[in-house]
Length: 456
Image (cartoon, rainbow, N blue to C red; front, side, top):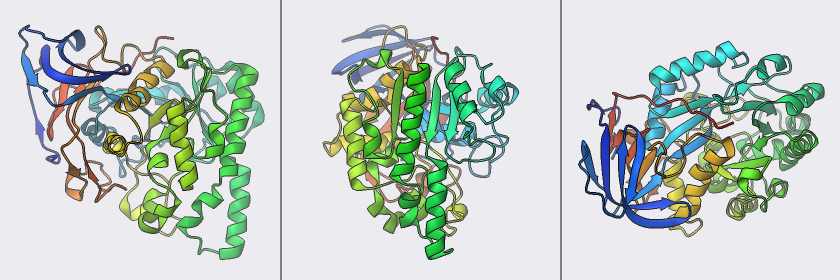
């Protein structure tokens, strides 16, 4: 059980020996020892007898590469009443996420290289996990966008659907410029604004201010998603853009993507989020605005098709789109309640629950949350359990149940859509760049995460 906000200060360990763990890596499951030295995986072997500063008995535990979450909203700067980089990275580490890529719709929006640098400075001082930040695009900052350094920044974020502040990119010429000139991966939020506004007007005409949460997936409809996603794919094919479409939420969109080409050679990739493969529209009756996301959680058929797309290779990555709001904000009527919810602490637990349900294998979870993210974004020496790679690792006890309660939720907002859920598996240890950052409810405060680098 997590001991909320309890931190322990330990001396830095230059060497750590993990003994007898069951490794899940590159499609294989096997027992081995892992020796960590100066932050890197120095040796993987059936039996290692070398002396280490710290030795961890991992018999009966599974060792996974830490999740690399390619889509989070940690709300700093400007929205820190909801969340901040310290609190949310802490929750991520407790949940087995070792690296994150954060989105630009903070306040101010991350639309200049200077503002982007400001976020990196905050993270260098406050983040417990490894980090990268997307450069934001708008209708009037293309010159700034094109200055982005591919070797030090994860990508460019384009909202092809409404969002916070001046971030909706709906100017066709601007989109052409970004897609044709971007020096780096372009990640898109795809919902067609015209379709959404048309649907909203129709529902307001019929229901006035009494629109309810069950209408959310009809207003932000499957059609709106497909129109926008297919437009992004068309632009990417036209300009040979390195395109990554975020949070696929419909069955129809899955068909837009290629399951044959090896991931390293793909120019167009896609992401699914945990909430779109866990919840469906029948859950609005119980969860209400707590599961109000953009794009919306849709039908059970959509949910099943997205998971099938993940398993088939049409969809390459599983992420969270962690986007916390206060409970007071989420408790407002549908039209006033913001979209988004906190997920980083419980994403891996939810995926492991789906493993117990027979829906996805451990090997596939690791592939979609670590290996493929590293390959897709060309992350330098992370995402795999390999000698010479950074030791971003997670130990899990597959059969140690944990119930999500208010007492063990680490998000600054203090709530979770999974509250009351009993997960069969528990994250016991998390290693960040070779530092044991989390162990059975205890956090170490002597190390921050590192800035991600990219081999581009």
